[in-house]
Image (cartoon, rainbow, N blue to C red; front, side):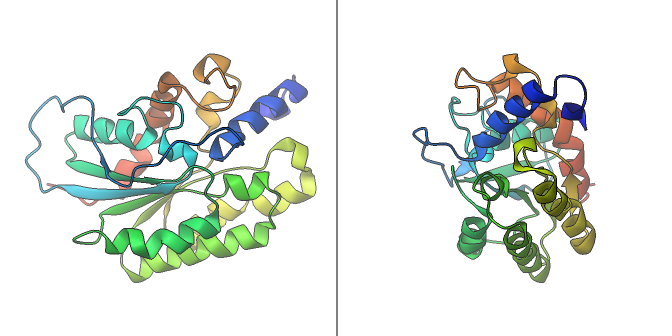
Length: 236
């Protein structure tokens, strides 16, 4: 993996700080559960029926330190609409959330919608890892989330996370396989490591050395929009 090349110590520190974006001791912004609105119109009219997407996650979705319209869900919505996909993303990102928190609020989030969403994208597990929670617990919670979505016939995309190097090889051996294994089990889309595009790119991280900048978010969107689009129903 990238940080296993030369400069291991520096890369490990950067990765650990980036993973802290999932929940830090800094004051956390209030995450909005209202639909995230694009800050730019699509290049051409989108005539197909609107597809609702739910972004269930932690501060990597909540938009910590960013202006309205700059969060990952908001920028992803803009990118999808630029492709002619009539998507509207509900930002259900809560800073500091763990997999158990996501599981506890999943039913409420889905039941608040008038109809089942076309897709749920999930970015959870980073806080579990940073707190040293047992990987078995993280796996069980994500498994339960995906099982609920399967029962509701709602497709999903998992935004994968990997263990920070300082947690050791034993922890990584248990944590890192969680996302690919569950994606395979449930037929979900998978982004193997959500933060990969900004690792070792300090210019794309905010001054707190933790959270991606708006430019960093755009890089994450560019690296993941294809996987998200693949999981949406055909609008033709």
